Each structure stands twice: as structure tokens, then as C-alpha cells.
Length: 94
Image (cartoon, rainbow, N blue to C red; front, top):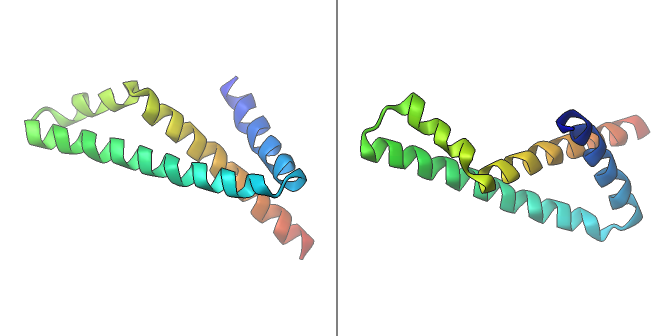
């Protein structure tokens, strides 16, 4: 399911943005929000670990239990594949 989603969702994003140009802006804004959420959760988790002086390798993996971190990370991955698909199609047209 994860592998199929990583192939199907970027393709769906590619074809839907061709049908409705407004989706390009929506996809980009969601990506900006996802990167902010992902980065802030990661940095806050690392700061807490350093501040609490806990064992780094075991405590940092708790960030993977945060659903917002996982959702943001998965969208970033799909978005990167979508952007690479767009870039590839632009290069093919040249």
C-alpha cells in the first residue's frame, strides 16, 4: 500500500494539476506547511532531548510516534516525487 501510494498519488497530483491550474498553488502551500510542521517537530524534539540530557539515540525515535510528523513527512515525500515528475516532463518537452 505504501509503495502503490508513492507511485499513484504523485501521478494523480500531476494529472489533476493539469486539469485545474489552481491545484498547483494548493499543492505548493500544503508542501510549505508540511515542511514547517516537519521541521518544527524535529527541532523541538531534539531541543527537548538536549535540554533534558537524555540518551539521544533512544529518545529521538519517539518523534516517529507523532502523527503530525508522519503525515507531514509522507506529504513531503509524495510532493518531491510529484515535483520530480513535473521537472522530468518539462525536460522531455525541450
